[in-house]
Image (cartoon, rainbow, N blue to C red; front, side, top):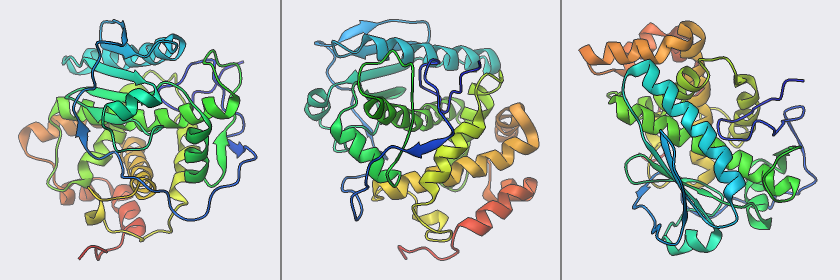
Length: 307
């Protein structure tokens, strides 16, 4: 039986059953506190961490998290090798798998359970799920968590599920790193967000071994936080809450799908080639991809809430 892999960075033995299912958790009322992971932080101290090397990904991990680290490294190695084979450019990921205590000592102001960017090509991720990460992601997903079975990672099914969803955020950040390495930028900030999502679809999924429809289930749940046109494209950036930032990421995921559905696995490659001639522009992208233009027009307001 084929195992589903709903996100980029989960063990292949983790299975998503029937999309998202109710995990018996009641979401707390109101919005969650804490900033979104929009900053790039300094690398945390690693002298007390263990190390697991690789060709494209170097991992520094807290003792007791080797199983999770090994599974994450396998996925990052696949991303790095595919990216180099496709572009001829090398990316060396540096990933820190940290305990809650180490997270606090690193000075991250983002809640534990939400990955953050560190350094140039680095990402810090939670090493363990716990009651607080379960509550965090249950609240963000309206009391819904993926059901996972057969995972080698220690923890209850709900704790492991909170790591699975956290790795969706790590996927976004891996896409950002790939886009940065390519130097693929546009004349409006939202283009980078869409390109990061497209990098995941074009590079990670180009071998056809992952199922983008499983990712879509999770992103639809994040998208349900706000109705369409709650924000304009100009509202993205620093100062967003975690919930609002995730709403933008879900929007960018489906915007990227509009491009991917038209140009397939070579979509990012075509845009990279185009960007070498001239900087990508919003008008150019919307004119070239009608479905993208229709999605953005239906989902975002024309007037910013911040202005």
